[in-house]
Image 1: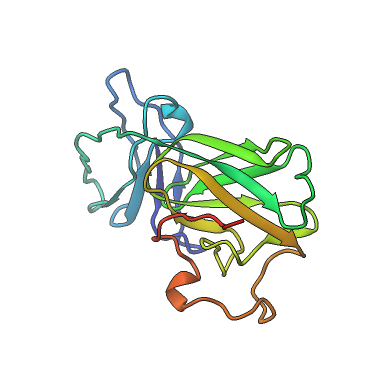
Image 2: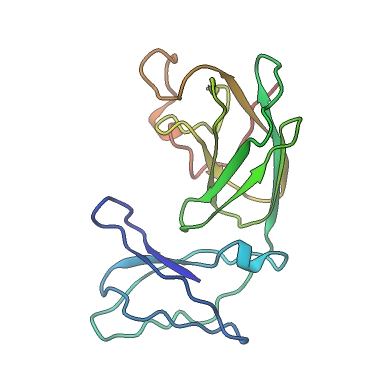
Length: 202
């Protein structure tokens, strides 16, 4: 189990050592800062094959208080699979890695793309996630509906199994919106973390 503040701003972000549950699933996190909003999470790797635990946001009490979060139910996890495609038709370089991070939790995993750019993540929670990949000389295309226009990755909410996600990359340097990428989407779509995760159309 892990614990991190919901405020991730520099100087405000706090992250605590991860702890393991006992055989009955009980755990204790000690010496947590009082009167702060935290996100509790279980690491994807620790629940591999068993499901996923949704993040739990709560506010700690005053100094000396105990926060009893009650029973936390493991729920079905999901599969996220698809392909990274280079727009010029070239193959994806060997050993290219796609990183998956959970927006609420301090948790991530990675997949090595195969020769055709395919990837397959299992046991992913139904929540907002981010995807990032680096290939020298390429950047994620603005044709990706779930493009994070502020940071250059892919971001969106996984709502169930998604096995045909296409991530389009095109020749170019590191992606940053600088006014030369065309008109950006409406303000609410520049970081679509709360919208369903969607792939590009080939």
